Image (cartoon, rainbow, N blue to C red; front, side):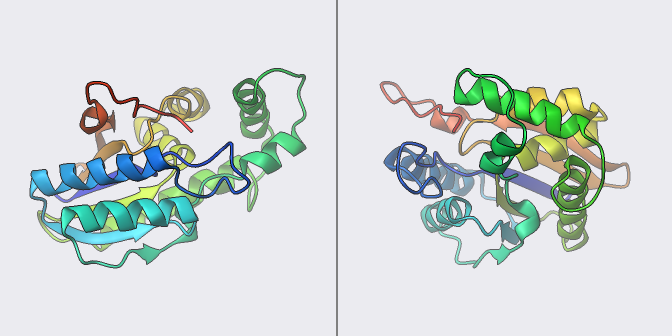
Length: 211
């Protein structure tokens, strides 16, 4: 069956002036991801990436390591939600950045509404982007989609029918440079595996990161 790999970008640079830049561990994660893609000997079809720098840098490094010459098609619907904007919009108590983000996401998903900037708009945009990718897949092909944790969680939770609680739970555990595998066939679109990161498990290396 046609397959879609939803790939989270490598570790960004939360401590730097520009967050939207792969860190040195992020580049290594992307390289190992590319080696894993090459090992699987996939019949690669469409290659897509969001427009964020960390997503496109991950794509470039992974594709180069895998020996795939395709240039990713840019689609902003695969971009992450604006986490800094959400933190400003939903100021809820104190605590760590992660705690505040969890609270902001909970408030965002509960706020309702539709269109740009809303949870429903974000989720529906991601699902529409997935539909466009599946429409362009040939028999036995695998699409590579370089995106972010929130988008992956939105798509996977929607496919599973878990709605907001599933989104929040999945969003917090998506590992950088992990792969979530979706298959598309007569039975519809189904989630086959979530958050596969075995290619990052190396003795002595701390490559399991979440930001």
